[in-house]
Image (tube, helix red, strand yellow):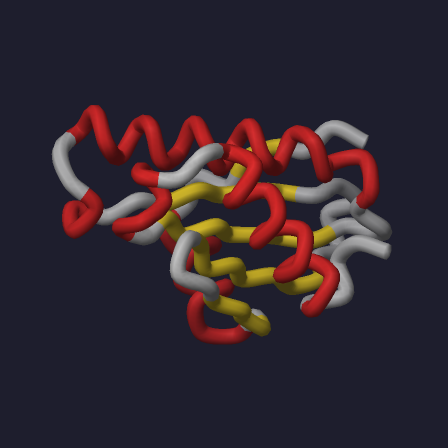
Length: 110
């Protein structure tokens, strides 16, 4: 199932306040069931991470990791991934391993 992206600030804020979250040194994940019928994903990387190049790299790494897990999601969820300072320094495989564990902990993937 193809996912669409979260763009509205209110959607991000709703997830920050209401959703369950799991954190690791590379990534923070917020997830919550939705009634949209499809999974919606948002990726954020704050100024703390570095300049535009580092922030875009962090988002690219997270997007690539999620694309490998996208097919395993059961149900429809709103998910927000927050990049951390270390995200830019690690390979996509490390982020993928963290993401897989976090999504399993949140009950998003089997």
